[in-house]
Length: 106
Ligand SMILES: [Zn+2]
Image 1: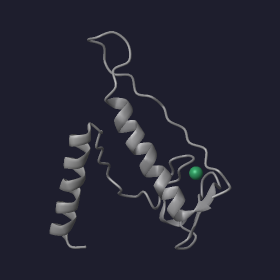
Image 2: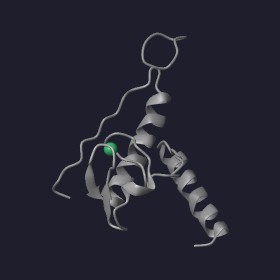
Image 3: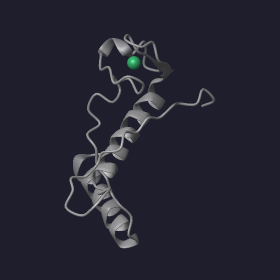
Protein backbone atom coordinates (compact mmCIF):
# COMPACT_ATOMS: atom_id res chain seq x y z
CA UNK A 1 0.00 0.00 0.00
CA UNK A 2 1.40 3.39 -0.96
CA UNK A 3 1.60 6.35 1.41
CA UNK A 4 -1.36 8.14 -0.23
CA UNK A 5 -3.55 5.04 -0.08
CA UNK A 6 -2.56 4.55 3.58
CA UNK A 7 -3.53 8.17 4.39
CA UNK A 8 -6.89 7.72 2.66
CA UNK A 9 -7.63 4.51 4.58
CA UNK A 10 -6.58 6.13 7.89
CA UNK A 11 -8.82 9.13 7.19
CA UNK A 12 -11.74 6.82 6.40
CA UNK A 13 -11.19 5.00 9.71
CA UNK A 14 -11.07 8.33 11.60
CA UNK A 15 -14.26 9.52 9.86
CA UNK A 16 -16.05 6.24 10.64
CA UNK A 17 -14.95 6.39 14.30
CA UNK A 18 -16.13 10.00 14.66
CA UNK A 19 -19.48 9.34 13.00
CA UNK A 20 -20.16 6.37 15.25
CA UNK A 21 -18.95 8.12 18.43
CA UNK A 22 -15.94 5.80 18.84
CA UNK A 23 -12.53 6.94 20.01
CA UNK A 24 -9.66 6.74 17.52
CA UNK A 25 -6.18 6.38 18.99
CA UNK A 26 -2.88 6.46 17.13
CA UNK A 27 0.35 5.14 18.61
CA UNK A 28 3.92 5.04 17.41
CA UNK A 29 4.72 1.42 16.50
CA UNK A 30 8.48 2.10 16.57
CA UNK A 31 10.40 -0.69 18.34
CA UNK A 32 7.20 -2.65 19.03
CA UNK A 33 8.79 -5.67 17.36
CA UNK A 34 11.83 -5.43 19.66
CA UNK A 35 10.14 -4.44 22.94
CA UNK A 36 9.27 -7.00 25.58
CA UNK A 37 5.58 -6.93 26.54
CA UNK A 38 6.46 -8.25 29.99
CA UNK A 39 9.29 -5.97 31.19
CA UNK A 40 9.60 -3.23 28.54
CA UNK A 41 13.17 -4.12 27.52
CA UNK A 42 13.97 -2.99 23.97
CA UNK A 43 16.73 -4.91 22.18
CA UNK A 44 17.31 -6.27 18.70
CA UNK A 45 18.51 -9.46 20.37
CA UNK A 46 14.99 -10.06 21.74
CA UNK A 47 14.06 -11.33 18.29
CA UNK A 48 15.36 -14.85 18.23
CA UNK A 49 13.94 -15.20 14.72
CA UNK A 50 11.26 -13.64 12.55
CA UNK A 51 8.62 -15.60 14.48
CA UNK A 52 10.08 -16.04 17.97
CA UNK A 53 10.38 -13.33 20.63
CA UNK A 54 12.65 -14.19 23.54
CA UNK A 55 13.49 -11.35 25.96
CA UNK A 56 17.19 -11.20 26.84
CA UNK A 57 16.35 -9.53 30.19
CA UNK A 58 13.39 -11.42 31.68
CA UNK A 59 13.32 -14.48 29.36
CA UNK A 60 9.67 -13.82 28.38
CA UNK A 61 8.83 -15.87 25.28
CA UNK A 62 6.01 -15.54 22.79
CA UNK A 63 5.27 -15.44 19.09
CA UNK A 64 6.90 -12.20 17.88
CA UNK A 65 3.69 -10.90 16.26
CA UNK A 66 1.62 -11.52 19.38
CA UNK A 67 4.23 -9.80 21.59
CA UNK A 68 4.31 -6.78 19.24
CA UNK A 69 0.49 -6.62 19.17
CA UNK A 70 0.40 -6.62 22.97
CA UNK A 71 3.03 -3.84 23.13
CA UNK A 72 0.90 -1.70 20.80
CA UNK A 73 -2.27 -2.54 22.77
CA UNK A 74 -0.67 -1.40 26.04
CA UNK A 75 0.38 1.87 24.35
CA UNK A 76 -3.19 2.38 23.11
CA UNK A 77 -4.64 1.70 26.56
CA UNK A 78 -2.12 4.09 28.13
CA UNK A 79 -3.13 6.84 25.69
CA UNK A 80 -6.79 6.14 26.40
CA UNK A 81 -6.21 6.13 30.18
CA UNK A 82 -4.33 9.44 29.97
CA UNK A 83 -7.41 11.05 28.46
CA UNK A 84 -9.57 10.01 31.40
CA UNK A 85 -9.81 12.29 34.40
CA UNK A 86 -10.17 10.30 37.57
CA UNK A 87 -11.10 12.34 40.59
CA UNK A 88 -12.34 15.89 40.94
CA UNK A 89 -12.46 18.42 38.15
CA UNK A 90 -9.29 20.47 37.94
CA UNK A 91 -7.01 17.68 39.10
CA UNK A 92 -4.34 16.24 36.86
CA UNK A 93 -5.29 13.03 35.06
CA UNK A 94 -4.31 9.82 36.76
CA UNK A 95 -2.57 7.39 34.47
CA UNK A 96 -3.70 3.84 34.85
CA UNK A 97 -1.06 1.16 34.89
CA UNK A 98 -2.04 -1.55 32.47
CA UNK A 99 -0.60 -4.98 32.83
CA UNK A 100 -1.42 -7.70 30.37
CA UNK A 101 -0.62 -11.29 30.90
CA UNK A 102 -0.52 -13.23 27.70
CA UNK A 103 -2.32 -16.50 27.38
CA UNK A 104 -0.18 -19.44 26.42
CA UNK A 105 -3.11 -20.74 24.42
CA UNK A 106 -2.73 -18.50 21.38
ZN1 LIG B 1 11.37 -8.88 29.24
